[in-house]
Length: 131
Length: 131
DNA sequence: ATAAAGGTTCCAGTCACTGGAAGGTCAAGG
DNA sequence: CCTTGACCTTCCAGTGACTGGAACCTTTAT
Image 1 (cartoon, rainbow over the protein chains, first blue to last red):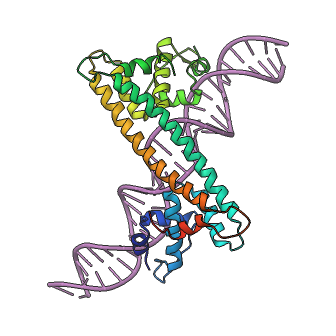
Image 2 (cartoon, rainbow over the protein chains, first blue to last red; image 1 turned 90 degrees about the vertical axis):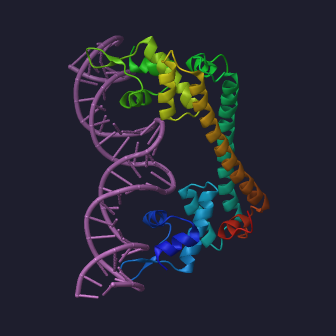
Image 3 (tube, each protein chain N blue to C red; image 1 turned 120 degrees about the vertical axis):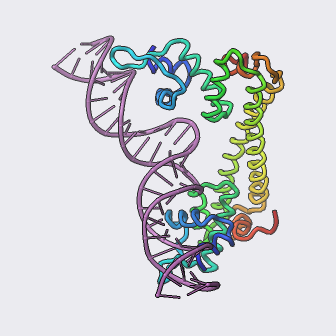
């Protein structure tokens, strides 16, 4: 199957699939005309990548996860460790964003949002009172 | 004051300050030796930028906010709009990350994390049951 | 004289794509 | 046979917001 079909089946853009080949995540065969030829295995692998990426794993994590997936003698502990480390990163990010959100909410609520220039948001950016 | 002092006072790396000059956010004077010379005004502007960035505003938002800050005839509504749009973006991001986190948590919890190869995490990446 | 600690410019790399140019291939229709 | 259009190919450049490093200059202290 050509790249367009693989793209349709995995939901990944063709560009992204070519990129994944470039960085060695998948290696489709080639037809005589030079077109990439994807087997069901390739598509399965691409779908795996798409889902891992959708869960926020980095490309390097994906590489690791794929390797574990294809290693029948893997220890599930290794997979779990990757996932847990990633989850911690996400938690950190959520905490950061949550803090930003709270500050912004406070500032937005304090701002009249009318035609006058007085603005607690700008005042805070210029010189925050606390926290 | 030289760039190092400006960096210390604002908490921004010198590299970042140079970058901000590059993209036209601040324009320090120059001493005869070619060194950048920062006034208190410049430092104030940099600190403003640092705080806006810390709240997650993009550089372009920062540019807008700085312009509003320096425009005495601004309407606070304009500032508020920028902040609110940004807050919505953050909310979206938090929701995305939260969803990832929930899925990951479910998978991590289901995984024994021992020396055996069986792993619900990989199984889900290979072919998710639902959601 | 020299060494350390600052400053300068410019170029390349990060991450994970994405857009676009320039061109090759293939099936259908006139 | 020719063209049109939808595919496919490669390669290069750009994204955002820095960051690292090379090569070099200036200042201060010893």
